[in-house]
Length: 464
Ligand code: F0G
Image (cartoon, rainbow, N blue to C red; front, side, top):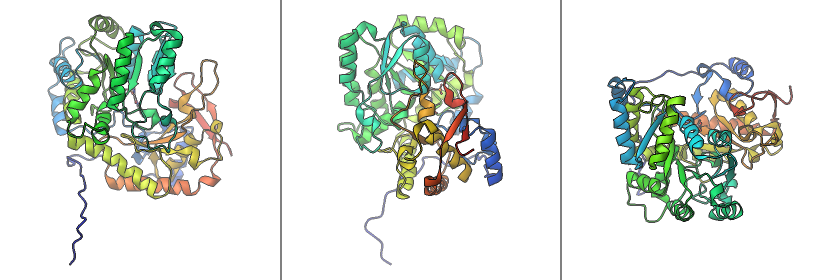
C-alpha cells in the first residue's frame, strides 16, 4: 500500500444533524404545472413543490439546539423584555454600536433609517443598490447613486474586493453637489447584487476618514458583515491572525451605525435591527419604531426571537462556523465551474451567481434571460433559484426599464441546511440546463407590480 504525501486537510461542518425535514422531487409534469401556475416566477412557487430551495439565505437557516432552547425561555412581556436587554448587550459586544432598535426584519430598519436621515432631494451614495434598501431611500425622497468600484461590473475579474467603494466617484458627487446634499453613505458588506463580494478594511477605513472630514455619516448594511470579516481574514494582509469578532468590531468602528437583516448572518428565521451611536438619531428612530414596528423594546419581534438572535450572533462569529459556511459556497461554485459553466468570480460568500449574459448571449435582456434560466432550473430538477438581473433592477424615475450590467441567477445557500450531496445534485442540474442553452428563448412579462416587481411579476415563455 502506498499512501500519498499530499493528503488534503478538508474542512467539515462544526455541527451534526439532530432533526431532519423531508423533501422530495415532484414529477416533471407536476413541475411544469407548478411553474406555469407561478407565472415563471420562482417567488410564486409553493415551497412544497420545491426539491432544493436556493431562493435565498434569508430566514432559511437551521437554528442550533441552543437557539431552540433560547426560544423556550423567551420573555414575552410587551415592554422591557429581558431578551431585549440581552440582545442589546450582544449587539454592543459584537457590533460595537451604542443604541439598539429592534425591527421585524432588515427592511424595517431601512425604513426607519431612511425616514430619520434622508431629506427629500438628498443623495444616498452606496456600493451598489440593494432592492429594498434603494426602495426605502427613494420612498424617503432620496436618490441612490452607485459608487461601487468598476471591477464589480465585470463578472470575470478576480479582484478580491469587488465590494469596494470607488472614493473618486464619491468625491465627484460631493464636489458637484456639496456635502450637505449627501444624506449619508450607505455601505454594504459582502455586496449582494455584485455577487456576494467583500469590501476591504483598507477601503472602509479610507471611506470613513474621507466622510469624517466632510461630516458625512457612514451607515453600514451589516446583513452579511460576518461573511465579509471572513474574507478580510483570508484575503487582506495584516488580518490573518485577527479573530472574526475583532475584524467585525473594526469594520463597525469606522461607521456610525447599521441596519441588519438578522435573517442572514444572525442565523434566525425572522428579525432585524437598527443600531446607531448618535443619541439624537436613536431618539428619533425610537419615536418612529413605535409607529411602524412595535414598542422600542421588541420592534416587531417576539421575545423568543430576540433571545434566539442574541445566541445566533454569538454562533455566527465562531471561526469554524463561518469557514464552513463560506467554503460550502466555494464547493458549489467550483463544481459548477468544473462543468464549464461561467459564474461570477471570485466566488462570493452566500451564493453562487451564474453569469447569464455568457450562458444565454442570444437572449436579449428585455426578454429576461436570467428569469428564464431560473425557471428552467426548476423544470430540470426542482431547484429554486432567484433572478438577479433586469427584473430585479426594475424601472428608473422616468419609468424606463433598467438594464443592469450584471444579468445573474443566484443560487443562494441557506446556512447549515444542505449537505454536499445536495450541492452535487444542484451543480449537475445547472450543467444539464446549460447543455440546452442554445435552444432556450426568453420570457415576456405579462404582469408587473409597481414596486419591487421581481417578487410578484408574472411571465410567459416567448415561444408561447
Ligand atoms: N440588505 C441586504 C444586503 C439584503 O440582502 C437584504 C435581504 C436586506 C437588506 C433586507 O432585509 O429581507 O430582512 O427585509 N435580502 C434577501 C435576499 C431578501 O434574498 O437577498 P430583509
